[in-house]
Image 1 (tube, rainbow, N blue to C red):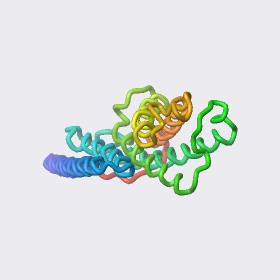
Image 2 (image 1 turned 120 degrees about the horizontal axis):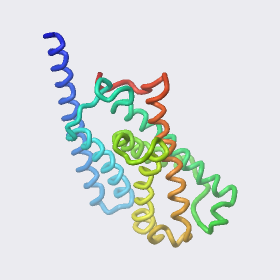
Image 3 (image 1 turned 90 degrees about the vertical axis):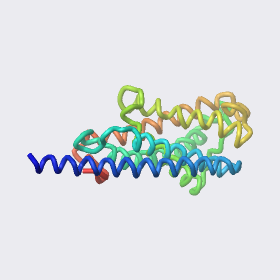
Image 4 (image 1 turned 30 degrees about the horizontal axis):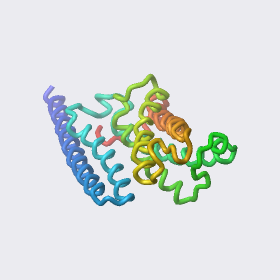
Length: 224
C-alpha cells in the first residue's frame, strides 16, 4: 500500500513538473510570437502566428489542470498525440504542395479561374512542411476537444483555422489579394478550404491511426 502511495506521489510530481515546464514554454512562445508580430515584417508576422499557435497549445496543457499520460488517457495520450501530430502535420504540408501542383497540372485552377502558384520549388515544399508541423502539433494537443465525428470531422473542423488565417490575413494583408483572395479568383476560397480540409483529414488520420494500430504508440511517451 505504501509503495503504491509512493508511486502515485512520484507520478503526481512528474505531472506537476511537466505542466510547469509546458506552461513556461507556452508563455515564452506566446511572448516570442507577440514580439515577432510587432516587427511588422511579413516573415515576422508569419513566424509570430506560428509561435502563438504553438504557445497557446502548450499553455492549454500546462495550465489546463488535467492529468496526462498513458495511465490516464490510454494509448493515445498527449505524448503520443504530439509525435503523431508532428508526423501528420509534416505529411499534410507536403500533401498540400502536391495537391496544389496537381490542381494546376490537370487544369482545375484554370477552369475555376484561380491564379495560384502551381509550380512549387523544393524550398516551398520545405516551408509547407514546416508550417504543417506547427499546425499538426496544435492538432495533437487539441485533438480530444476538437468538434467532429472521427478523424474526418475533426480534421476538417480543425482545418478551418489555417483556412481562415489564409483567407482573412495572408491574402489581404501580406499579399494584397483582398479578403478571401478574390483578386486572384472568386473561387479561390473554395480551393483553400477544400485543400486544407483534405490535408487536415490526413493529419487527423495519422493521430487516429496511432490509437488504433497494434504499432501504437508511435512516439515514445514523455510521461510514463
